[in-house]
Structure formats: C-alpha cells, structure tokens
Length: 125
Image 1 (cartoon, helix red, strand yellow):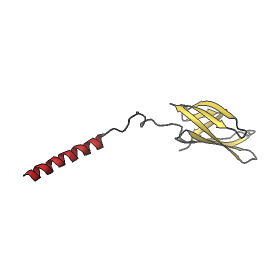
Image 2 (cartoon, rainbow, N blue to C red; image 1 turned 135 degrees about the horizontal axis):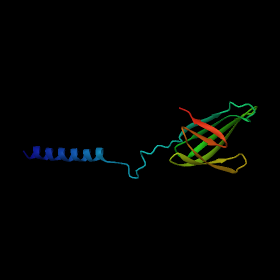
Image 3 (cartoon, rainbow, N blue to C red; image 1 turned 45 degrees about the vertical axis):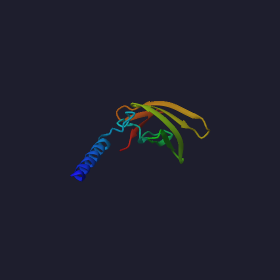
Image 4 (cartoon, one colour; image 1 turned 180 degrees about the horizontal axis):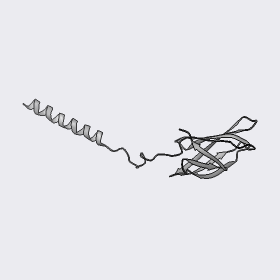
C-alpha cells in the first residue's frame, strides 16, 4: 500500500511539474508578437526612360542589418551594407557608401511601399 501511495505521489508531482512547464509563458519582455514589417526584399524597377537607375533592391534582415543593391544603365551592380532601426511602419536607414560616408534617411511604409531617395520600393512576396 505504501508503494502505491508513493507512486501516486510521484505521479502527481510529475504531472504538476509538466503542467508548469507547458503552461509557462516565456515572453518576458513582451516583444515576441511584434512583427518587423521591413524584413524581406523590397525592389524598385525603372519604367521611365532617361533614368540612370535600372533597378534597386533593399534586403532587410531581422538583426537590423541590410544590403542595398543598385543597378545603373550600362553598369554592373553596386552593393552596399547598412543598418536600420524601425518603430512601427517607419525606419531610419543608414547606408555606407563606397567612400566610407554614411547616408541616413527615414522611410515610412504606406500601402505596402516606401520611398527612398525619390525611388518607390515595393515588398516582394
């Protein structure tokens, strides 16, 4: 009888511990449900004649880094590294040029698009 009572007590403790682990909320800082709207690839494609830029692409990563690639008419791609910080639908973008200077611009997503250096970018699905 003592063995059965001991086993029953152990079973209750294991079940209680299991329920605590499964029911535990790991969201200590409350930001797991926030979705970064910038993460992904955004592109600009020129449909205008006389424009120097054929296409441009932003690739935003979740860690706050980005790649910016511009393709000029008659030239190869120019890829630059950068960083960004976002709040809601707005982001501050910092891009390093080939000369070591940093260009900073703030953009806002409106209708699934944003404008950077007067070029309209659309998020790719």
